[in-house]
Amino acid sequence: MTSVNNPPADPGCVFCKIVAGSIPCHKVFETEHLLSFLDIGPLARGHILLIPKAHYVTLDELPEDLAAGCAQALPRLARALKAATGASDYNLLENNGALAGQVVKHVHFHLIPRAEGDGLGYRWPAGKLDAAEAERLKKAFAAELG
Ligand code: 5GP
Ligand code: ZN
Image (cartoon, rainbow, N blue to C red):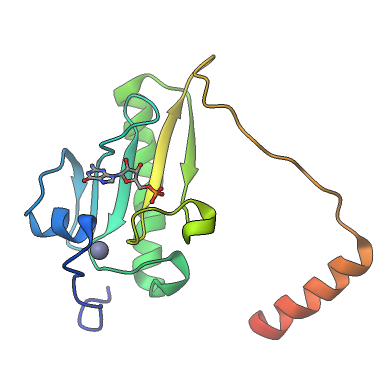
C-alpha cells in the first residue's frame, strides 16, 4: 500500500495528532495505514471514525490502494459496530469540504449506529431526474471516466 508518496502529517490537524499519539483517542482498530476510534462527539452510542493515517483532506485525493484499504476495513468495522452496540442499522457518512459538513480536514468515514426514535432523522429531499440533463451529465462523466 502507498506510503512513500504520502503527504506529511499536518501539524495543525487533530487527526494527525491522534495518529502521532500526541492527542489520545479510544482506539478500536488499527493497521499499518488505518486507524479507527470512537468519535469524541458521538451522534449515537458507538459512533466510530475510520481514517487513513496519512493526511489526505478529501476522498478524491486518496490513492486507490489506500481507498481500497478503507473500503476493505469498513464491512468488518460495521459488523463490530453492530455486535458491540446491538444496533441492527447504521449510517456510513463521509463529508468532503465545508459545504458538505466536513469540519476536520483529514479524510474520515463515520459509522453511526441507528435506533428507532433516535431523533437523528434522515433528510433526503429527492428531485426528479430530467432526461436531457441526464444525457448532458452522462457525457460530462464519460469525458472524465471514459
Ligand atoms: P466532520 O464534520 O468533519 O465529518 O466530522 C468530524 C468528527 O470528528 C466529528 O464527529 C467530531 O466529533 C470528531 N472529532 C473532532 N475532534 C476529535 C477528537 O479530538 N477526537 C475524536 N475522537 N473525535 C474528534
Ligand atoms: Zn491530518
